[in-house]
Length: 272
Image (cartoon, rainbow, N blue to C red; front, side, top):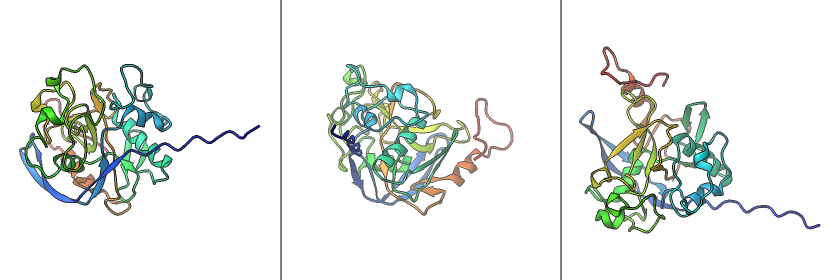
């Protein structure tokens, strides 16, 4: 009897290089801006598709929505959705292991630590995402919206196959429109607890929501129909460091340290 063949290793996501640079990140709630300097890194040419998601064994703890097989309404070349933030980081670790890379994340219940000094797949920081999206532009979009993004103006009923709209100058497709994309950062540790940031806009969003600077946040275990993710890769700091590429654990703690009376509905993140 012939020995059983070993299944081929899954192909890693296709990444494009992004050069280092600097940008100003703006916070509409506080009316502030901060300058961020970035090292070069790599980012996904497209959001992770259903075919790419399924090519990696389902990580333990993933929600059913993220492991569902494509069907007629979920073609393999469409962005995987809905995907929770926790599912995205678990998938990044599983994809890293499959590719022989060091996993970027250590998970302990709801606590997730990013080792900025390893080269496994990971979610981009907000600064990385916006820098990669802008690709050297300073306008709200990196091209005419109808040419680069699936939005409400297209009157489609769900995410569309990736790569059908024009890329930006760095070679990424669908950074605007199609699906919102998870980033690593907390959305606002003072107001929204452990919510994480989303960028890019989705297929059903109006033009004012589909801009390089627009941000949205949601709970890391929220199941949102218009949300997927794009991976990044690159060691961007020393092993064990708690800041990189515009993100800082110390800044998260400082923002969460709300003293005195809080506005109604604010839920500062504790235990950072």
